[in-house]
Image (cartoon, rainbow, N blue to C red):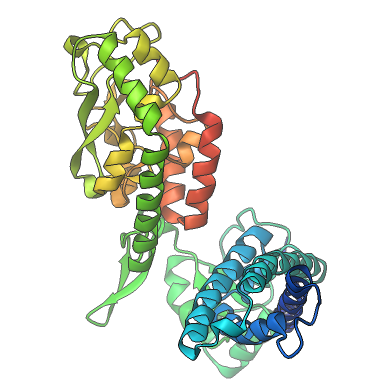
Length: 455
């Protein structure tokens, strides 16, 4: 639906909400440390001459505020989902706690402060930061609606695609907007039509894209032009090479810092899991060895990051003389190749546990797209023959579990749809990675360990 009235900016309202969030955070943290005083020392003001909680808040609060502002915790994400906003605030608090501890150590003032009060106050502050975001998010929805940024879509001689009702739509030709004129009158007319919109998207014929590119540059809003021809390169973004514009179609989903964080997570989780599950690992190994002649582990070549092959470890579930090292034949229900122990460990996912060692070796991650054998097929076609997007999933390490697995897309790929469904989940994971999503996927995996799609 088109509109004739210019959009109203929401920038000032967002700024007020950001400031409110910062103020509420400070009051919440102060209240939490005062409460910590009362819980630990029996008085909200601490001991005479030693107001521990308040002193700790005085040290911690400015550090937290600087780190939170720098990390974008008081940005647009604060007005979206409470979980995402809280995660950034808690991360900033954790960093502030570490910096405060270093300052206290070098100032040699640790003996004057109550360690327990510091721990309790910091822990309660996590709850305080979450409560603040619940309040700010609620206010944001009342003040700004579902869309905190005002968006404007301009159609110039092309059909208007289906858009959410909250997006303001203008028909450029109906209101006399012609970017080809490139004069002061047209610039003023465009500015009036755009109003307070902060994000302007134009859809137009190819021969008018250059005109709109020039016109949009006169605005303070972020301007974009829809280029359907680039859909085959998606996901993509703009870049430059030798001062010439380029389309970046591949750059790796994780930057250096993210790779470090993900690797630390993988090493810590896999190491702890191996120690904690060692009785299960040993017991399963004994059961496999007694079930039929042959090695305990089944090792098969799989495609890893950058499509480089590596040897994956699994508990052997088939008879040695019938093992499918090339993954040429799909496992069927009541498959004669599978031993009785093998059927149980496949159904309960115990056969996957040795991949924890692949994670320690660096071939795999805890979370990521599942690694496939080069010869694996969906129906009668190799995976990459079914969908040309298949190779995009190899820009990241494969995982023991992943987004596709917790959604139930696992087991045999008997038809093309079986592969396409899990491929779409894999690409979604690759393009929208975060350590918090890894943790969420890992937790949800426990609900799907036992499944009826493993034969």
